[in-house]
Image (cartoon, rainbow, N blue to C red; front, side, top):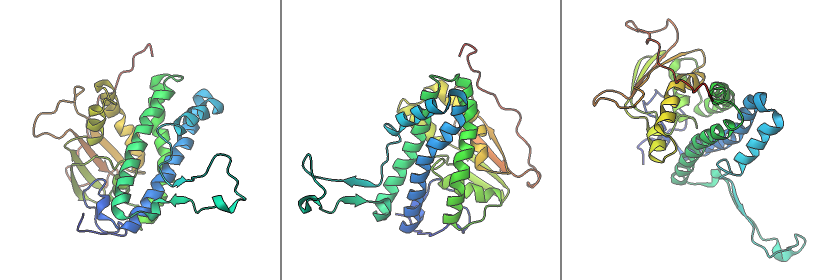
Length: 291
């Protein structure tokens, strides 16, 4: 267990991703509730964007399919035990139900629950894509993802800022929320270099999310590279008013030993340290014209 037990994130950026163990039980109970709400908000974000392509009814049919699969609610748990045809009016069957909310859990259990929410949320996004491409051209589906994330961030970030007790102004403020949000906490870690509050560089040594999903068979290499090329467009909304640049790995994802997997540069326009140089244009995934 961590030596820290923070109840907010008003202290300096810790240079860590998903370090929920550094925060108090009460903080994590509220974070879990935010994640539960955000999991439900996914339905609105996806159906709002892709109903423009397939119509409202068809979009919500997809949402219904999601609710029966990867987005089935984890908490609260409620189980009732009674014989078939039971009658609420009978005092014999009016036993107290077993009802647990996330706020009832101790810190170790909250950590496990939050970790399951990260995995559920990210895998759900992949499953949404798998379903949308059955009725929408694949390139249009991927091009719609930044708007999906804009909706989710607009919903999630005010809740996180209130919990963290911060007023986000600088790049580093948005980074605090990004690395503890439901979107970015599974593993975009590496060496963070905070040059100033509005100029930060991340040397990402290993993409934990991509490697995890490749190991599990969820991401074939082609899809992994596609995700890399869309990462800047998907992640930019996490830093409103800021500029995000990403130096991508090669398409085969093979990195020489001692070199970062990719490099992320966060700035705010001209408010950067001396020596800043913008990255050259990065390669883009080429969709099959027949798709």
